[in-house]
Image (cartoon, rainbow, N blue to C red; front, side):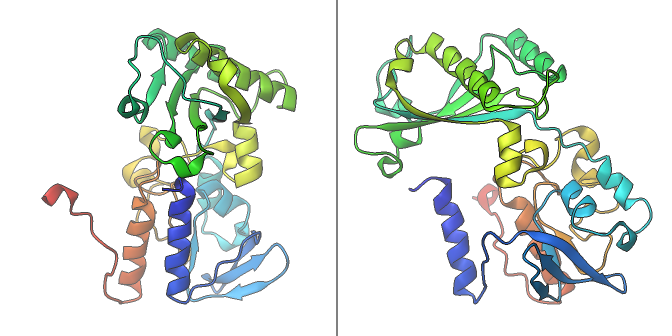
Length: 301
């Protein structure tokens, strides 16, 4: 209950329970390196925090090219980070609804409403949407993956109302026709609504409010480079032992006592927490402490 924010709150609570301090609105300006060892960070407000180890949850490009001095890195690392592919390709449209939408050919059933919906015409539709992204524009006939969280968790919307979350592909971080503007953002959102309306006649009449996020907004508001929600493209040359780049796939970075734990590391993408759990295990090994990270025994059942 409580949506994804409940997970964040649970993690924050666990940190504080164990004596950790959480600072918000405190962006990292630079990772401090002395004698080729990470020794802390400088925040944007000038505060300096010294630490035995530094763990970055930023993507590889942002970590090594924005908050580190190139001279603190071994030869070639800055270039590898600069070439790390991280082009944003998806948007998000959150819609507040006055009621539960009905979909053509789908019986009204609260259990069905709790499932996900995928809106696309065919594989060719997917391919054409991808072509639009390659040429720097969004698709007027996008592929949409939707869920209605309020169908199973009434706490995320007022009584009788609903919230629909839409993951949209494809949408570029940079437009060929010029920069993103609020008008273009709204046009992108309208294309999403038009697509849903085709499968749910009367859907537009239910809309109370919309929040549209292109890769541009995602980067500006959340700090994900180019709005890439996976912190790096999930292509074969950037997976497994190549993530973020060859030689540094075990969460230990080129500077001693510096680690990475975000989706720029293996296995990347999604909200599995696997990257962070794996990084924590490696850090505990280096600190010569017992492994207290829970193991996933799902497949042993």
